[in-house]
Every structure is written in C-alpha cells, then in structure tokens.
Image (cartoon, rainbow, N blue to C red; front, side, top):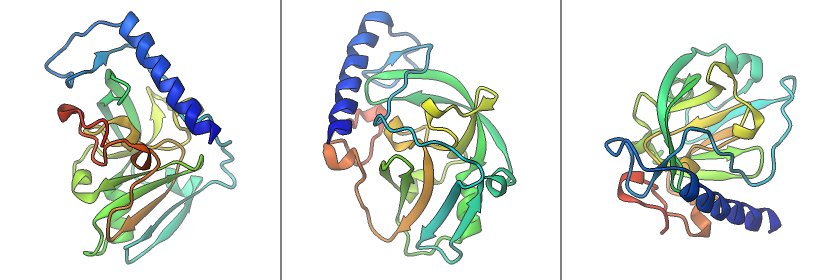
Length: 210
C-alpha cells in the first residue's frame, strides 16, 4: 500500500538527516546505535485521524473479566499521572527527558481485570496501525497512556489525543492515535512486526529487525 511505502521512505530520509545534524553524547543513557536529538521528529503512516471528543471512544477487551468502553470525558476522569521518560526510535534517534501526563496502564488493566490466560497486549489505533507487546514487558510503573506532552494536550502529529508510552522498548511499540487495547492468550504480530521489524524491540540489544 502507498502509505506503508511512504512511511518506510520517510524513516530512511529521517535517518540520513539525523546522521548529518546530531552528535552522539550521553552514552550512559543512550542505547547502542542511537543518536541523541533535542527536537521530537514526527513519523507516522501519513494518516492522522481527526479527534472529536463528543464521539471518541476508548475500549479494553479480550482476555479480561470486565471489558469496558470510555468516552473522552470518562477517560480524562481517570487518575492522572505525570512522568519524564527517554524515548528511543528504531530510526536511530533518541530524546531524553520528555515530559508526559496521562493514565497508567495498570489503572486500566486493574479496571478490566486481566484473566490468567492473557499473555499479550495489542494496541489498536485510529489510523489502522497496531502493535503487540508481551504482558511481562508492561509490569513497570512507567507504562503510560499519554494525553499531554510537555504540559500541553498531546498534538495530533505526536499521536493525539492519546498514545501509549512503553519507554523501555523502541517507539514503534508506543502506538499513536490509540483507541483500543486487546488482551490475547497468544501473540499476534502487529503492523511493523509483520513487515520485518523485530517482535520484541529492545533498544539496548538493538532488536530492530527480525
């Protein structure tokens, strides 16, 4: 499909650009093969779904005892958390100390009641994107569904109104335009995983491609 080819070409162009403009510093926090930047590059599939708070819905379903659906107002009423996290993109750029706010994933999973049969979480998004993450990677206290970036509403170009944040993995596992979480009893590779990206995506061991 054209949008996939365009996304791949955009990633290649961005990689060339970053190699020219940025140096490698802060090696103790920088995964191997990464380049530190101070802006926040924008990458997506070229589809940015419009946000209407009156009709927007967020769902959690699958291997849970209490599947649910929330309006934007109901989602924003959930406990809010702020955090600062580093961000590592598979196109070899990283940015330190990005300030986010949103709802911890643990709040949503507790609300849904995850069944013992669940092993993986699938993020499904408004642009047709999806990605898979093992539940064992999502036990940390810094896994966030973010709706604010640097003290402002998360802008559309960075996945607004809502995106996942899984700081310990490459950023394709932190899906933009998030609309649904599905708990599954087995793995199901997502958009980039089906197109040659690594299924796990650990930046510290450079798990870029399968």
